[in-house]
Image (cartoon, rainbow, N blue to C red; front, side):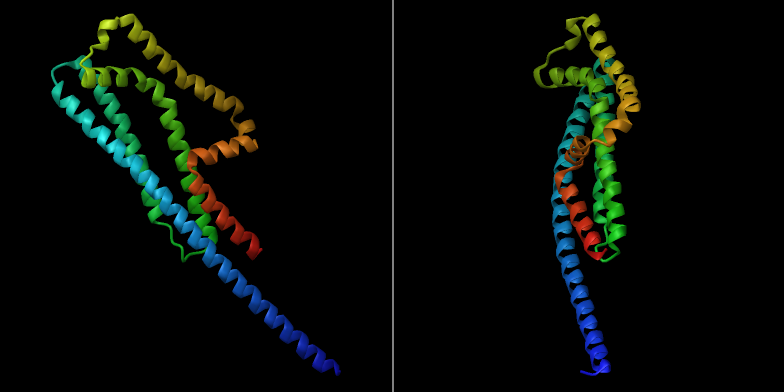
Length: 219
């Protein structure tokens, strides 16, 4: 076989290989983007259910506030609890807006960046909710027992309420100190990564993994 013929066959083989790789990449990208979209739709549904539940809570607290406008001892904790719930709803709405803004026709890197940003937002939102939850314990107790059962928690004594409120306040700076001292070490832990994924949502973690698979294949 002549050398020119060998070169021609080699070039043709390379073209076929490149075409095959491009086709495989396109098929993998399409399939994984479809998986990513499906998982993000599940995540949107989860967030929407949470948002609806919190919105119902806001309405219920609003009704309680309307019924106790002239009773500051019930009005103040209810208002605090209402602000807490409103902040959560705003955070959830922002997450839904970010998911809706994902452009599946854009570069994979851009989609990955958006999803990582969403992952961090969900982690921070959940940690913020957990961080301030102890502070909301006393207002929630006052409002729920009064609104649902007609019980006046203040009858238990101001000392008991003050102790619970101080505990809730003390938890916040303690949590910040622990985060500053051990946050860097925990961030490198595989267990912590799994915990963060659990907080952010398994659907979101799986969507990010699908995009990472595309990047690895392209590489």
